[in-house]
Amino acid sequence: MDKFIIEGGIPLNGEVHISGSKNAALPILCSSILADDICTYTNIPALRDISTITEVLSTLGMGIERPCNGCIVIDPRTTSSYEAPYELVKSMRASILVLGPLLAKYKKAKVSLPGGCAIGVRPIDMHLKALTKMGANITLSHGYVMAFTEGLKGTRIVFDTPTVGGTENIMMAASLAEGTTVIEGAAKEPEVVDLAYALIAMGAQIDGAGQSTITIDGTPSLSGLEYRVIPDRIEVGTFLIAGAITKGDLILKDARADHVVAVVDKLLEMGVAINQREDGSLHVDGKHDLLPVQVDTVPYPGFPTDMQAQIMALACITPGTTSITENIFENRFMHVPELVRLGGRLEEKGHTVIVQGVEQFQGASVMATDLRASASLVLAALNARGLTEIRRIYHLDRGYENLDQKLVKLGARVRRERGGL
Image (tube, rainbow, N blue to C red):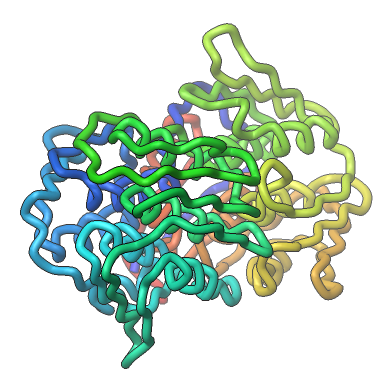
């Protein structure tokens, strides 16, 4: 397996282009199942998760072409299978997003129970209960979700807690269902809104995306489309912290400032200088003293759980005491002992980590445990005195496009090597 060797202590300077959003691209690519004609998508990041979902779609019989970098063309007219096998789905939870479209379009689906990052229990019960209420007959057998329907019907769906995947699955299914579906307690994330815009471009009738109530009036069919995916807001947040933790000076091109308001606000509170330029790019100046804060992860538009590990790395070199509380996932502190190995002073207290700032991280050998934990270790390594070896970086390749190459262009000393556990 690949590993990173990083020599830290070097300020990052220059421009970095933000890639397309993985978490927006995955459901949008799945939505092509619903179309009656060719779908062309641009600004698609070159990531392992994207390769996995296109393999799933290819297994369903759909035609997949990549005519240029960042572009994927899908022909759903050749769909001949309705099974997403374990061999593919085991590595990525987002594969469950083929369930709603397959049921809506073909009235049957066989989808393996999903895998993905080990950051806690993320059940799909809400997906299955909602589809059942819409008229699906669902059973679990030998590790697979077996589903069929005589035709999905619009209904009222209430999510007790916002679920991004559940909102996306039901929104896709409802687009071809008979009648009107109302989702209450819907997730508000920009990725949900981007999926809604893609579906609307296909001819779906959706109102309220980005709000807690979404209304979908089902249509008999959906057309093909050409669509550009939004930038990755988590990559934006990660590079903002990269500028701060290295005391660098960065310009983030192709960023959407309106998607990272909570992150920017918290970094401003910490003393990081961030400005939006006239061209829409974000400028971060990390050469300012840092201040301790309190961070609580909550559903969008609050501070995202996907930025918790990264801001924890920054808190480690912030004078004073910072508290970080994780309210979304129950097992998302696996990066804490690795940050301790790098010289951080952290103490877990239930769902909260208390961080006592140190002057600088110290290089060491560490192991990545999940996607965002991996990013926190890279950030810490960029700050650290000496060399840091980060093993199991395949997690990073799932969610960050060419991260090592982007960092090198900004002046970082990062090299990728074969080896490690």
